[in-house]
Amino acid sequence: MAEKLVFFVNILYYCKTYLIDFHMELEIKLKEGIGELAFNSSIDQAIKLFGKPNDVENIGEDIDYPTTILHYDNLGLSLFFETNETCKLTCIDIDNLDATIFGQKILDCTSRKIEELMIKNNIFNETKEKEDWGEMRISFEDYSIDFYFIDDKLVSVTFGK
Image (cartoon, rainbow, N blue to C red; front, side):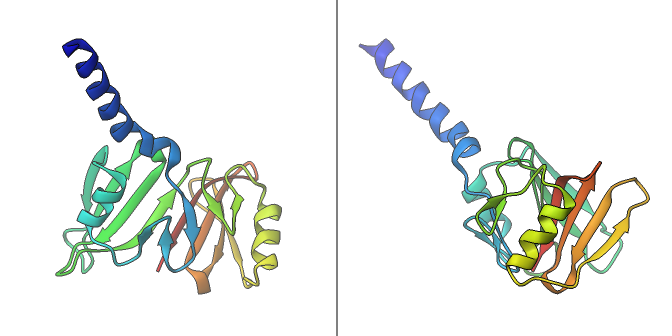
């Protein structure tokens, strides 16, 4: 009986630890956040929702806006928090194949598909630029979102409040 109990406890632990990876809603909500996580959320709120990050990185300690980044490799997600008096979520980067915007999965889409999706949702005025590192970027500055492409396939999205 004790072995069965240990087995079930292990199963519950597994579910709590790893189920988030498979069922987390990763809907990009422009100027709002992702899934249930809103911009201006705290690091504690993010950890409560997504669990412990794989890595925590601190950058820019010598500038006006030092930043703490929580990396969730298992979710293809990085959360950027301005490390000031309030330490709030300001930017998100995602490369998860299950990420959606306007209910549509977008990773691996072509640049044309992304442009059509944005136009369909009344978002215009994009700018395009080839980055020094080789990716092509399509930005919609009014909505604080950048789409990054390699060989005309969307590989990541960065967006803010």
